[in-house]
Image (cartoon, rainbow, N blue to C red; front, top):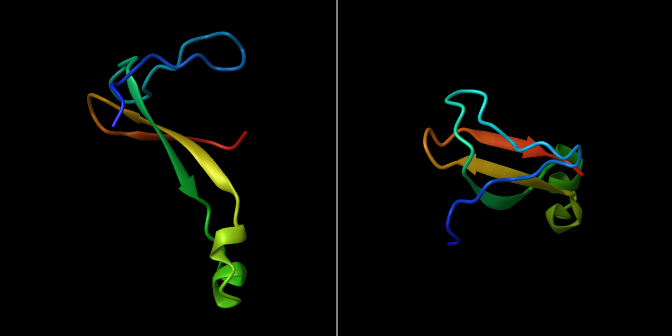
Length: 65
């Protein structure tokens, strides 16, 4: 696992945790599962979300870009 790092958003500002105002995050990617795709056994075809996990309080900040 990579060390927590600051995250720069597309608008040029640094991401700050909404809960504790920490500025260090771990980067993750998660599948956005949908009922229809799961029903057809096509979970692999779902989109991914970019997630940043706060290194202090562990709150997950989800982004889809």
